[in-house]
Length: 279
Ligand code: NAP
Image 1 (cartoon, rainbow, N blue to C red):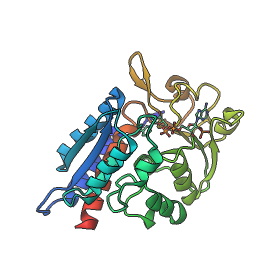
Image 2 (cartoon, protein in one colour):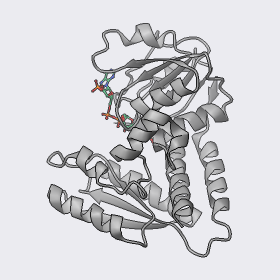
Image 3 (cartoon, rainbow, N blue to C red):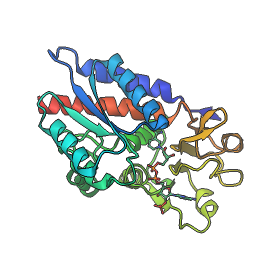
Image 4 (cartoon, rainbow, N blue to C red):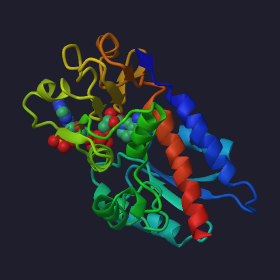
């Protein structure tokens, strides 16, 4: 069984992204909006800031109180939309419960929407596919990049996506279907997930529940992409019970060290692509 090295895949994307900036007389600026002091969000943001530094992207942190009103947050995003020095904007999720995530994400200017989350970009992506937008959703593209890096032949395969969020599950489903896979989507109303996962040549899990996918739920020789991030005594783990998977699957992404680093690398790539498109 092969353990897929997300850090190695990420390094390659970061190298290629850095190359795109050779000869540019200024650096791209990525604004990262962080609301509140959630410790997990802080860790993810620190990783993004570190990656920006390594590639030559200026990260502009906008840290706001967890008590900020919806209107104040909309104004902050709007200031970034109007700031000519800012090339790309991302809002770290989750947001406090009193804020509408949908409204905030949709307020990001489509030209600076580095994660493809505003309605016009996401709608275009859904309707016409990844090549219709300047940048595509980062984690779903990280999943596809991992499959491609492992030379997984997607066309004609049975793929199962567990999780149906706008950020991960839905766009992954679309990308896999666009590449010729027959895709089944499972979510929290699915009665028996195992019935579906057992026939998955490609299994993508993005839920946020430790050990949701465990013994007896894998197809022999399959490829498993574990997007989930959960806290445990040793740090973090995914949604897949790694020990029971490794006896039967062909390859699997570990957590940590799998999808996470590739997602950050795709964010860097998207920032540079927006910068180059808009300058
Ligand atoms: P989310 O918005 O909370 O969506 C979770 C999805 O899982 C929903 O579609 C939900 O179904 C489904 N679900 C909930 N309980 C389930 C169950 N028991 N069985 C099957 N499906 C169930 O989460 P998200 O933003 O997509 O993130 C999912 C996980 O990926 C989280 O752990 C997050 O931290 C992680 N993540 C990792 C990265 C990375 O770079 N590695 C990036 C983004 C997210 P309904 O639609 O029916 O509610």
